[in-house]
Each structure stands twice: as structure tokens, then as C-alpha cells.
Image (cartoon, rainbow, N blue to C red):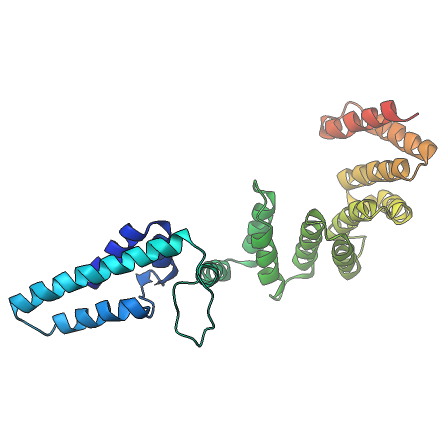
Length: 288
């Protein structure tokens, strides 16, 4: 009988009632919220009906219950059409506060998400944060929470550096340039530029510095990274490209042109660097 009430209210009240039904789902089973003032009567009648065997009384209470449900239906429809009045938690609710409802739903979803992440191994959670950052559109909030959950664990220095670098990239994409620079610098200082993870952190820091228009610092770090043999050829070439771009942004046309020309000579004919050489040629065509 109780499930029938929730179904009737959900059908009559439209989208808001559906959200209410979702909001009270905990652990895969429905947990009815405490009834509002008009719901007390219906719930009370349900309890009485279960203890009265008379068919006449059951028919009468069914009519009253139907009337109560219809009253709730009209009230929920009115709430769905108008912004509900917000009342103090200690007061008697005059209706369902949509803002509170949404927060309840969000907390339930967040907890379910955290429970799922807890079951993942460290690298699996890192991979999940990457997925959230590269999906269309980017799930910034989800990626931030995933990285926060990952960084709260005891990680290897390598994975911690990668996760912190990922966080710095996320902050940059969100326009938090000062935070991004500090985060990437922390990753770089923690593992060192002579490691693969440190080289990646340095490369990402170059771009954050460039977006901050800190061209001098970007040029210095790009030059330093480009000279690191253990950074790997791809990182070194990209560092040289970043250095040339930073030089162009700083107005040092000669240095920029020299950098782009050097890259074309080093990478021409190598399909791995096709996009890089194409971009170098575009820059050279644009430089005067």
C-alpha cells in the first residue's frame, strides 16, 4: 500500500516527484522521508487501515486515502511550478525546498562515487581522473574529486608526481593560473626535472607560465628542459617548441625564428612530429 502511494504521487506530481523518489533511495532501497504536514494524515490512515479488518472501514479509509493522495498531488504540482518558500530547518516545512532536495541528491551521488573510487586501485583511480578530464565536456568537478581522493592515499613518488601534475593541468584549464603554477612547481620540486615525471611537470609548467605572460620564466624553464637528455626525445622537442613560442610571445623574433627552424631540421620527415613541424611552419610564415 505504501509503495502505491509513492507511485501515485510520483505520477501525478511530474518531474519533481520523480526527483523526490530518487532522493530517498539509499543503498538501492526506498527510504521514505519524514512526511510533510499533509502527508501525516495519509501515513496515519495507512497504519490504522492495517489493523482494522472491517471491509466497510477499509473502503471508507481508501476513499479518504485517495483524497489525501490527490491533495498531495496538487501540492507537489504547485511546488513544481513555483519556487518553494525556504524555511529554517527547525521550523515546520511549508513545502519541499528544491535547493535542499538537490543538495541531498548531490550528496547521495557523491557518496556513491566515493564508494566506487574506494574499490579502485591507485593507478586505476589515476586513469579515471584522466578519463574525466578528457571526456567531452570535461567533468572538472569529478576530476577534481577523483584527484583529491587519490592524493589522500599513500602513493609512490612517481604516481604522486603524475597526479599532482594532472591537478595542475586541471587548475590551468579552469583558469586558476596561480594555483596551477604552484601545483606544478610542487610536482617538479618533489620528483626533480631529471625524471620522466619531473620533465612532464616542467613541460606543463612552461605552458602555465606562458598563459600568465611570464615569458622570461617560461623561456628559462623551456631551455633547461630542452637540454635534458633523459627527458626523452618527445618531451625535448616539445620543450624546444614551447621555448620558440614563448620567445615569439615575448617579442624575441630572432630567437623564435631560430627555434622553429631548428625544429624543422631535426624533425622533418619524422611522422611522429608531423603536427609539430606543421605548426613550426605556420609560425615561421607568420613571423616577420
